[in-house]
Amino acid sequence: MDEKLKSTLDKVIRLTQQNDEFGTELRKALQIKPSASGVNNSNDTRLKHIESYLGLDYYVDGQPSLIDYSFVPEAEIRAQLISDNREMMRYRYGTRYHAINFVEYCRYAHLQVEMLLNYFYDRLELGDLEAIKAHITRHNKNAQITDAKSLSAISYNSKLWSFCDEFSIDIKYKICLDNIREVRNQSSHRSPSGEERTMEESRKKLINMGIPLHPKDGYVLTAKLKEGTNAFNLYNSMVKNTDWYKEYKVLIWMAQKEQYDNIMESIKLISSTIKQSLIN
Image (tube, rainbow, N blue to C red; front, top):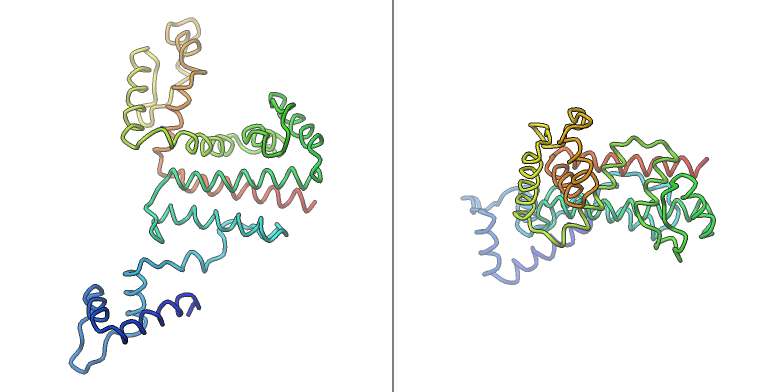
């Protein structure tokens, strides 16, 4: 048995022995009825009941990280990556007092990717900030990082898009990892009901402009926008590069349940790519 779990169980047992009222209430809460012979449920069954009742979840703690961070020799950095990965999974499955929460899942995913990118550039260029800037701009010509005074001051997007270009990361992973940043940034300004209203309002706005949308997910069907038409002109002048449309696309992306797995796969790809790059 896990030592943490055993210690907690021992404390609960001692408390039931020292306080009859606590023992009685605990048995009621666990729906444990004394048998005619005075023998309670098996130890394994009682343990599961107690673990559930107390909200204890050592399963996640006891498992290896779902992403391989063993290539990081620095114990503190490796431990933080593993911790963020486990916290992310708690928000996916609702364990250890965590409600299932996609926004928090994205937040801890973003923390891992940001730390991985910083780690990669720091190790690759041995902490030389000017060399790091040169490396990033070599693969991301649009990166505005000349005045950055530290690696952490360089925007996440500048590092992400440079990294993805350098290692030819598929666009679907780029978008996924960019969107977790957007979700994190937007989460403090919106309630779940507000998200739904914003998405619906934006969808209606696009429809009123005559812009064709995919019937299932609501993305703009750009292939159906014919050059010279009113819809084409409106899309390019009043939609394409606007903040509200970018937000609309993120909200559509968030609504797709498979994003949990897509995010995990995206982080795994970044991690494994960094591992191979630094080894070579």
